[in-house]
Length: 414
Image 1: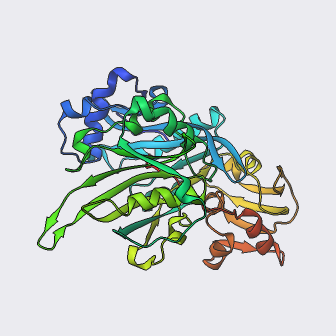
Image 2 (image 1 turned 135 degrees about the horizontal axis):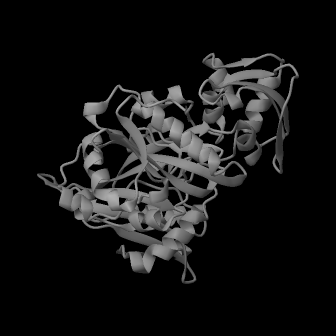
Image 3 (image 1 turned 60 degrees about the vertical axis):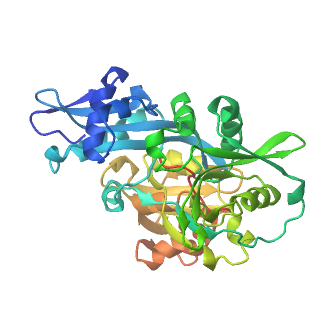
């Protein structure tokens, strides 16, 4: 592990240091909220996975934490993933190697817990590549005009939609059950009680002048089968009402439910647009909209993935087609991953073994992480000079196997 400079030490951060954590977080991520307001918020942290760096006088000057995604979806399977979060360094202690030490600490502790993969949302995309994280998922953002025409879907009119004020006590179990059932790579499940509670909290300072959270619950025969969380913000201009619907999360298990929910979201009275973030690039709405261009589609980075144990991580997922390939992997941060690995796999199982056979493909662990969820093609990475082919045909067959039938995405920022 990288050593800290003199005068700093790594420490555990138990819950009784929450006030120190919030003060540091306010320095790392500028906020207009007071300390009292911050202390009044629900905390999403799992405290035995929260670590910090103290200066010599005991001041907390850096921290990181992780979420226990014990049932994280990857192509064809679920596997434990360590969700790196709350990474911050006080501006007075930057450029001293504190981040590198914390990343090393995160890797070591994650591996000790049996988590072969780490994932994160990057506040600054340029930071995490040097630690071996690759861009594994992107998300779609839309501004859908009110009344946008949607295509017809058989059965959508049989789906009943109830629109209500979000009540964690009433809706929490439904939201957790439906969200956890989604089988899309990257769809990070909220496995801890803290995450489930925080995701449904709705503090007034975070509303930006909009109303409290609402939920549209889709039902078949009285049973909830999908939902959309959203809030409205009114605005008035000379021509008339120009309000905005902010769509927070949509869970729809089939086309009819998706059509019914989006039919409500894009046609609420006094609203001019429905703005949705964190949608999969292949979300149903992209094909339900008759005029996608009018929704101003924009793609941004979503999840970044790091394989901490290449052998275990590659064996944990499934593959869209049979594959038998020797991958030569470089990894300067975790040298145990470096070397040649024979991957054999398919839709039902996978195995990974070290080998001395000649490499079919060579790539860095960063590119392997980018391809891991099936959303970043190995062929595209090869086109950028980041994957090298040594056996004719190996790239095409391996890229096909690593792909998946749905695009990866995480529906919430952690």
